[in-house]
Length: 162
Image (cartoon, rainbow, N blue to C red; front, top):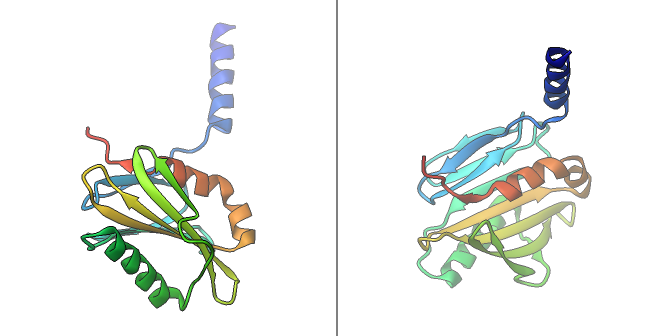
């Protein structure tokens, strides 16, 4: 009886437990984040990109070469304008937060005549490195992938030492 109960409990937990996301590291910046199951990832020396399975959501982490906050903000804006065309921003610095110990300044805007939501997050790591994190989605894809976006967002942190 105990063995049957244990097997049933194990099977039930396997069905309801979320699939472990893959941890991707951006070594040059000293940060990591979890890519949800089935998301496509790309990585090079200075950036990592997470794309939803259908391509409707992207999260891009980019190490910024700037020396000051103003230069980093300009680098974020230039990079986004180059990729998307002119981004229409709401109030600058929509919020300032801590994300797992990392300082974050967040802006919200739109591109492509309002069809694309853009969120730019300027992260400062514990050792002073600056990272731009850009989210691109639509209201529909944001709803569809809310749980996956939360997985990424909540997992952003300094690289764990093994």
